[in-house]
Length: 34
View 1 (cartoon, rainbow, N blue to C red):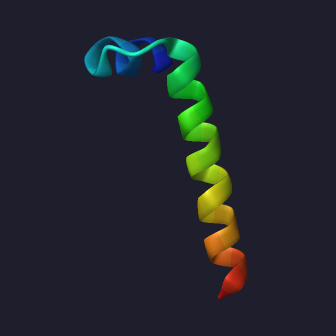
View 2: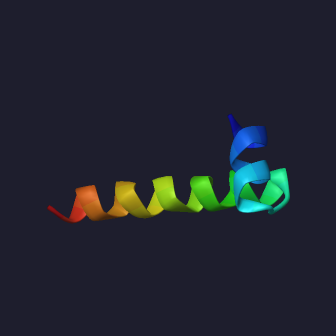
C-alpha cells in the first residue's frame, strides 16, 4: 500500500503517489513508441 511504501522509504504518502503516477505515465509513453 502507499502507506507501507511511505514508511519504508521515509517519505510522505503524497510523494509516493505522485512518483508512482509519473512512473506509470513514463511507462505508457515508452510502450507507445514501440
